[in-house]
Image 1 (tube, rainbow, N blue to C red):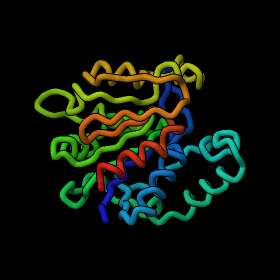
Image 2 (image 1 turned 135 degrees about the vertical axis):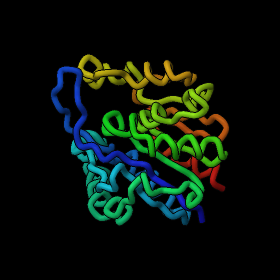
Image 3 (image 1 turned 45 degrees about the vertical axis):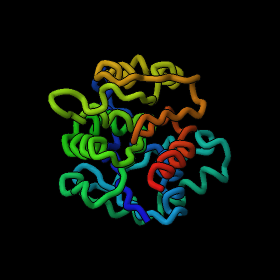
Length: 230
């Protein structure tokens, strides 16, 4: 059994470039699917957020339309509402990486608001990467990379990775409103960004790092991360 740390957003709003607030949180599929994969494998999951707040789910991620089927959406809503892991998070500031075998961060636009500038999240990700522990990040969860500093630079510089692309942000009609775009910031931080076709499953594995482009990649990312834990 491995002990997995889920680093999750505590932000339920994302500040757009005109100062308005966009309702957000974590994207249900990107948290629920890996949670169930790790549970099924017998792993223990602990959720940590800034301040230890209960992670807010993006309501848009719970609709039938977002999930392709009413049954899938209903399942995600049930897990979000009942999972003890989501209901009882710990404070990121209190987390010691020594207590965990791997780290995972789901997306949603919430991480663009808080994890992108959260020193505790960045510290844990940099430590895990340096220690060779499996690190998984999906979609906008890659925003947490931006706070991961190591020896004066970004800890993930030189790693091959993917995440929510500029093209996908444009197709989601948020690119013009975003204060910055994830792909641009990751590339500026020295990440070797690899983009696939929009909204297709796409995972990159580089050493102990597993990254995935979008919600459609959640299951493949969890399986790849699980393989590193084996």
